[in-house]
Length: 242
Image 1 (cartoon, rainbow, N blue to C red):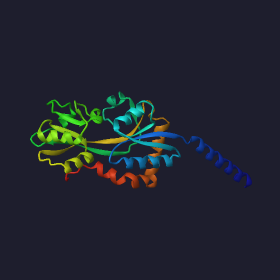
Image 2 (cartoon, rainbow, N blue to C red):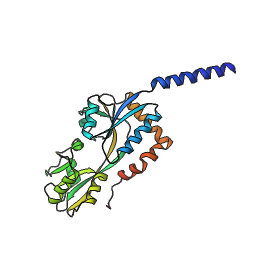
Image 3 (cartoon, helix red, strand yellow):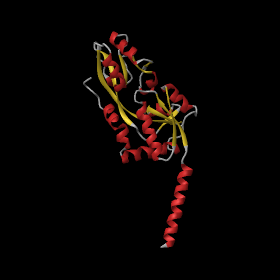
Image 4 (cartoon, one colour):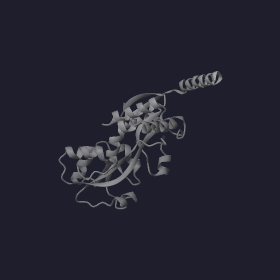
């Protein structure tokens, strides 16, 4: 009996020592968004569950990618996973194996124009003038012009200067509600998966595994639901009524 207790104590000490040795500090950058705090809380929970320290900085989206690509940060959040695998492989960063959530993107078009979403996805043969946020042009398999301002793009759609604008439903609907737009209609475009940005060549590596384990743990213990569950459900469904 004493021998068993001694062995158990040794195992506990070894486990504790291993946990301390395996704990590391990682630099995390989060995109400056209205919901940045949600992502910050999510990563804090992941760090706690995996016994690691995440030093978090909120930065403009362009700097987020720059930091990860240039070894100034270990993790970036969030990023949309490209459905075109070949295009994804050519980027200067990798994406995590684990998912954060799914998000609806909407096509905002001038009411006087009939655009078939499937035509856009098949290369936009009719050459419609479409814009999206400058950080998301790689999402689409047709020529999509970059925009630095959601409101400015919506005004161009309203006036017929461009044919459409594609972006995340939540961010763009907010602008649409607050503006005086009479000539814009909304069409469901697609649902995309949000993931974490990690360094090129590190998918399947240490940081990727930490994120996977962390997400699985907080989903199991209810922390994911508490932090981001309501938001995740909201952005996943196309809202016909705004």
